[in-house]
Amino acid sequence: MKHILKRYAPLLLLTLSGLITSCDDELDENYTEVGPQLPTVLANTSFTPDTKYAVGETVPLEINFASQGEPIREVLVLQKVEPSRDSVVVQTIPYQPAYSRIKRADTLVVRYVVPQAANKAIIRVDVRVVSQNGQSKTRSAAFRVAEPTPTIRINSVSNVTAPTAGPVVSGDVVRYNLTLNVNGVTSATATTPATSILYKDLDSLITYVRVGTTAERRLLRQRLPAVGAQTGAATTLNVDAPVPANSAGQAVTFRFEAKVRTPARTASVSSAPITPAAATALAAVRPITLSYTGTTGGDQAAFNFATFSAATAADAATVKDIAITSIATNQVKLDALNTTRLVKTTAAVYNAATLNSIRQTYLTATAANQVASVANVLVGDVYVARVRGGDQYVIFTVTGLNRTATGASLILDVKAL
Image (cartoon, rainbow, N blue to C red; front, side, top):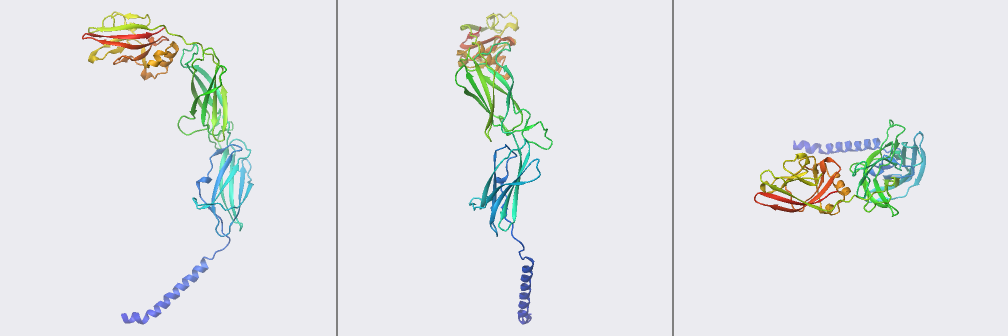
């Protein structure tokens, strides 16, 4: 066997050499380059524009490319504006090398300015890279034309603090119901109604206030919407504007300004002037004492705010606006035995209390905080009471708590009309 291999080895090598040479000849024939080379345009997310732009807005379109073979000669920018079916050249940009080490490619930012066109019209932009040999490569983008300037109107006004027939005073909260971008949509398709208007996205709403002849100042700023994706669609919302302090007898005007960030546009509307009345003062502080004795409380455990007098044990529960109902486990429990409800508040509210301010404190509290029972009353606690669901409000603070072996006493300082 070894003898045979030695004898025929030169012949085998010669045969293999011929086969390899034959393969090389075939590769050369099959892969000969034919025709000029296309420019290389790289994919990049910087080219993709937004879905809507305003007339006159600049749209940045970034092209990343590499000249291979024939160098780049120029970049053409073409546009087709609906309803036209034809594309026209709007820019011719001579090639200038601008190599980016970060992107490892030549870069060119085309700044395309949106031409005059109808709202919702589709514009297609083609950016064509042309080589010296005449070959080209194109990237395209399309978007719709949107209205940049928002609209705003006041639908209704209501005082959410005072009764409907009551006067507005300092500290009241006036609710303005607004609509922004009437008939607006945030995107469009072929089936979008012709009466709809495509708007740029709303950014924020600013509320300004002017009192009398003083300079206007910013009162509130809110994002539109408060959370979530921003939109150009028609939006209806409430703005709760507090009437400034010390504004009684002066004209108070609110102005609401809707803003679009890109491009920067605003629209505003002003309210009719409000002249707040003076707040209704409460009477001087009147102390009362609730005393719980025995097992049922006795005749001094409850109080009637409507008559501002003690409610005896024999009186109906409907007149017992507050009552000590238990002193078990060393805790004094205070209950409203009728439809009176209590809201816990602060010493600052007590010190500055007017009928209007305590009404506001109660009405702006959540339903969960409007309670009929307080499990453990402590010295320093402050409560606003709405008496039997009507427009009578009382504020009191606990100034004393005395416990004995058989009972307990609460001392309250009360402010009421």
